[in-house]
Length: 79
Length: 213
Image (cartoon, each protein chain N blue to C red):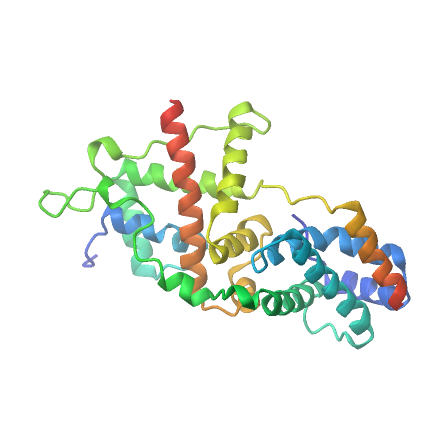
């Protein structure tokens, strides 16, 4: 590979693109190469994954029953 | 979160709605309305107004169900209409995706954590600033609950557009293309908003874990 390696402060900005699989192939190779010998960035990526999975556990609010009834009556009025 | 159906299932739901099947409507409301409320809150300032926006969307669905051609999924249809209504209601608050992206100039990690340009390894973590892995937190553990609560609070503090994109991607599990289309933003902007939002939450979790270690 002739491409310049990426530094930690660059890698941290690419994590979402990396996880989405939307990095250009060259960038993906440089990202993976950096991870191989940088424990800090490997840990950063792990932290990021945990963050995303924690966000995925944030519950949606239950519908307020009165609001739900309003929606149901909208259906009854229009059908 | 399972929010998508096969085309055949979807056609069954649409037929039931057209036939005036109240339980089909109730099931659809229970499936989508909580997420719709969450998204509407990204545009309008109060829960009351968000509820009005959601209600208006369902009325539009009921009125329009006989003309619904199934070119998009019901979910995409609902969120497209929801966002159009919410935007109109939220206009006085002057929110705009691209402004929010451009207004941000810094990195998503404090630059002081990296070595400077006079260091032999510029741009690399300073020794005291190297990230440590987050601990495993089994479902229902005290620490897991605490991190989830922190995440929930931090999400509420994010700038509107970041919160909206993080909510749609990470909580509602929409994909990038769907979010870009619904919010009418570019792929690049979507990614920046998602990344900034996630990075802000990550920082709060890291700070908490470092302080409590």
